[in-house]
Length: 180
Picture 1 (tube, one colour):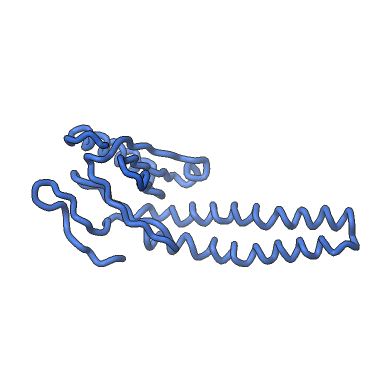
Picture 2 (cartoon, rainbow, N blue to C red):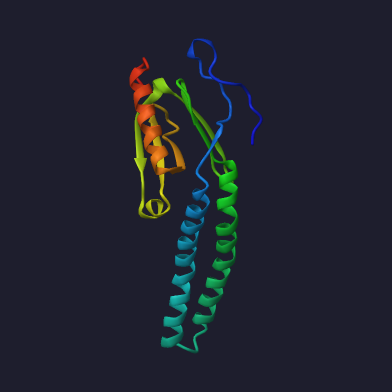
């Protein structure tokens, strides 16, 4: 975890740069692993099915062997990413909300550390895809008046995500500023 650069907001509500304190829900590891397995399965299955089809249609062409090799070549890094990425993301992902700002730290190879002052927040949304619902998780997306785009907090417990979205909406409405 990065070394703290500053604590809490400064005098007068000034936002100070520092890493967020809260981890995402531990179930996010299983969610990210399952999502990785699904993507990996598709990436390996497509060339494998093509190898079976091509091998049945033209058994002496050599294309089936090439497609089986491609399936194996894709399977090894896909499996490695599926096993490593969720653990790494869980160690890195952090979030926090204060009365002054939303803080996020996300990524696994390329990490992004973002701070959004409450006065810059335009919308707060929650998303729950089918796989997230299976794990009881949700994503909170905070859209800001920034060219960098929205901040996302992926892997929150669904109830906690709803509470965070409600709190952010309340604080944002009470914060002066035009979010532009």
